[in-house]
Length: 638
Image (cartoon, rainbow, N blue to C red; front, side):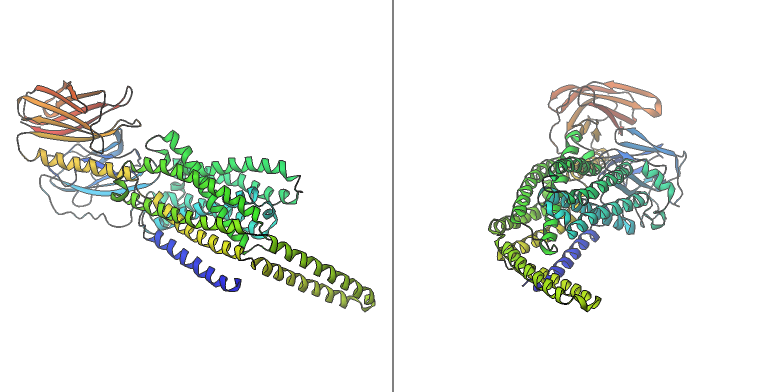
């Protein structure tokens, strides 16, 4: 019966690998986790005169290099001046040369978001009137191409290595201590360590090219590698390598001194290995948490420990499942039903922790129910939830087989083998006494017979063990669990490279507000409406402020200020201030302090505009006692 399983196992593994490859290759370039929410000048607009600078606003803080922001004239010549700099909060700007001629200009940006992912893009605006341009923004971009694919593959292998290393070691130490002396289990855990180490080194080499040029030739650029080591992501990768050195010591003790101890002597060493292994495993998990999703956004102080627990729960469950699969299919030593039951209990606890931490992470990354269906992150998360549910369902079937699993067949087989060995030993002893004078040739023959007998004993033990129908059913269910787990890991890898739903929806809301502002200010309806996104940097500091001027003319005007959250709800904040400046005539700033009318609504009447012109409207928003920011936009009044 087991002979027919092997080809099925190979076929299933090949299909699973193909599915994972399809997921990884169709993911495309890594989606940015910081989104461009606004710019000045805005995309596609035509301005009357050349601006002094170009500013870009992102949904979160980003890291800049000397060439992060570039502005190209119609002939492709760079017209920016100096290095880009941070203006305020999440807004960054680069100065332009004076006296720029009319035409269409291209703005390109390439930055790294706070959670270590590259952000690249381009847009155009025109001075005076649109014109043809020779600038092409196609080609290699950060996070794409061969380097992007290799980086995604490296991330997948690093997750897989971590899961096998931590979960396999936990299975041996906590569920099946006899497995420390089983060669396939040793190879599995050591293979996980080697995979994680190699993948980490690969990511470290790829990081510089991945976040900049995207060229294969830049992988071994030492200058780029030096820059990477100074970043948060580089520090996380180096920390992971140092922790892997400690993990190597843990593995050598687990499969060396620990395996050679007697059962009674293992107790103290088990406790020490459990404490040390937990510390190393938590440190490895923290190397992801400190540089990715959990390190930015809401409640980072809670999110990072939760992320560590989430990763450890995944590793103990799926890595232990892999170890159990190897033990059932590759190990000559039988896996006792008690060991399988212990793993079943550990897996149940891991699933509980996984669900609890997953619910928190989903709330933090999505922010609304609509994000499940309206964002790519939410859609992938639904796929992941479905796979986890399927995995739990198959695990329930495995628990049924575990409850029925009996060791009596294996023990009976051992007794039979023992009797046969005693008989063979006695027979061999008698023959050896009568054949002592036959020389060295008989000793070689005896050694050959001993090897044949050992092979027969192993085959007989395997047949006896496999004759248990419950053990055969457990094998099949665990194999199915492992297959789903491989696909689940691929979906998770793609999910970590996808823009969170909360960020995507905030960016859409900000862009919609920017478009509304542009159309309102150019409609010539006698009123001006300005929408500006802001981020005070606090835990709840993002929103959109809207300023209305009616009738937007010289003299008295009614001004209304509305403050909303990214989802469109009124934002109750303690203070709003407005300042008006006509820079061309050196008038202002004219301070205006509106009165609070209702939640998220302020108003001021008879606001005097002394002269027509291009007025800069600066709004200071304070969301707490210490968190505030100022955003501004120009409007033609009068």
